[in-house]
Image (cartoon, rainbow, N blue to C red; front, side, top):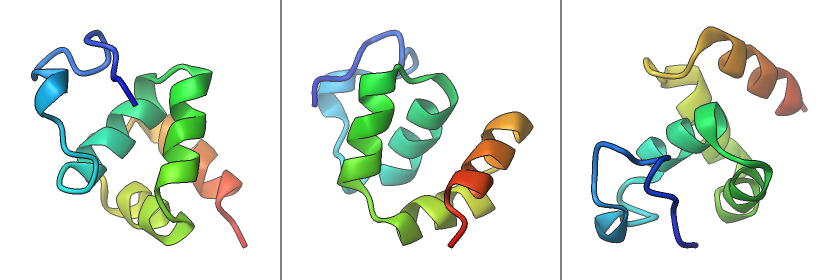
Length: 74
């Protein structure tokens, strides 16, 4: 996926590696992403990986965390 520069304003989107920078990508997209970007994250990363990032993230907004914890319940 080609990332919007506005989503990753503090880095060059061309240098982002989807595996190496998975936590960074997930956090940004869940907090600030458009619908198509969120769908991409949902299909690209496993549910367990999403849960891990959401549980341990220090940068996700509280409302974002709460929403995604509800969405990812088993």
